Every structure is written in C-alpha cells, then in structure tokens.
Length: 306
Image (cartoon, rainbow, N blue to C red; front, side, top):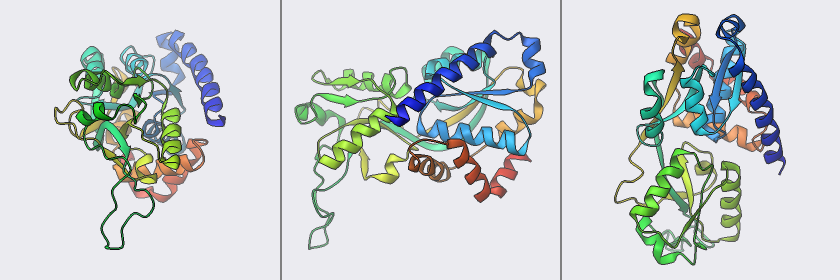
C-alpha cells in the first residue's frame, strides 16, 4: 500500500509538472534547458530513466525531470515534443503499433538494451525440496508448459491471466494471444506492475496456480524461478530490443545531451542489478540507487559521455 500511495502521489505531481511543460511556449522551453524524460512505471523503465536523469544532473550539470505516464502517452509526448526523450521503446514487436503511428515525428537512436523478451509466465517452483534423493529435479507444482495448454487448466488458474496497465504493449499482445489460442475461458486482469508482482508473490508463497504477463529484464526473474510458456504460434515474437527515442530538434538544440543519449547502452545483467537494488527498498528512492550504480560503474558512465 505504501508503494501504491507513493506512486499515485508522484504520478499526480508529475502530471502537474508535465501539463505545465506541455503548455510552455517553444521559445520558453528552449530557454529553460530542462530535459524532460517520459517513462512508464515498469521496473526496467524506472531503473533506466532514473539512471539517465542521474547522469545528466550529476555528470553533465543538466537539469532533468522525469514524467511517469502510460505507454501510449509516453510515445505521443515525445512525438509531439512535450517530452524530449524516452529510453523505454520495446521494438520491433511490443511497441510496434506505437512506432508505426509516431515514427515520422521521432528520432530513433537505436537499441540501448538487447535480449529482451515478453510472454506469459508461470512459477517454475517445486513443492518441498527442489531435488529428490536421486539428485533429479522434482516436478514443479504448475505442470503447464505452453500457452495452448492453459485452456485445459482454466479452473486451476481461476480463469485469470494477471496483467499490468491496459495500454502496455504486452497487454495488446496478450489479448491477441487469447484470441489466437482460443482462451475464451480466461479473463485478462488489468492492473499495474506492482499489483501483478504482489499477486505473483502471494501465489508462490501459497503454492497456488497463477499465470502473469512477464518480461525480461525484470527483477522477478532474479527473485523466483519462473518460466515463459511456450508460444508455438509466436504471437509474442522472439527476443527484442529496447530503443531510445528523441524528439526532433533535440540534436540541434542540445547536442551534448543528444550525444549522451545516443551513446547510452546497458546490459540486461547490469540493469537487473539496478532493478534489484530498487526493489529491495520496495521501489522507493530509485534515484539514490542510480547514484549507487554510478559509483560502481564509473568507467561505463564515462564511456557514455565520450
């Protein structure tokens, strides 16, 4: 509850700030010199956006505001110039529909992280001991291996797929997967990343059956043994990349900032470490954890600034 309340308050504050920024005349925005980054409140986007903000402010002496919003508004805000950039564009599949809609009004700086994946996820956890006396691994308590099998176990899953915010790309793909695989006995439950991981944690603790919308990179894969359900019709696509997108004109107005954003690259393992640090504090103080990351990865930070 504490996380949800804090997030809600911050969303309201960011909304007020962002509305003011959107109404600001172009000349005032240029004179203001404050970089505005749009992001969605997903663990990977929170971690990477706070890291970008920390580098801008601590290393480049560049004021920076970060604004939380839904995925559709994130894309629109950068395309119409209300935000300067984002580092949370999942391509080519998850956010493909947004890219198709806004690509003519954006500058794609390319991937900042490679090796991502989305899909439906279940716990891969055994009842009792992980291995038997023979040394072989005991069977997990959820025996489903693929998405088509879900419809045979709808009652065990209470007819629910636990999702996140309804405008997220993974939710669009999940609605498509439900049609393709005929999961008419399931409902996709809207929510947030916080509510999804809370339900996952509770189900694992009670060893109940649960299926959620999941993605890599995410801290939950470091905390629990989880598995992606096989997707024989490839609805969710293969591995993806997270791209950095900038508004048009940023390169000419703020070349050093643009160059830094263009240089920014991070591995799933490094971002995963930052996400774990943030999650250990229940999602609070992500900027402080970004500063901690900077202290441990000075050479990497300097490479982005070259």
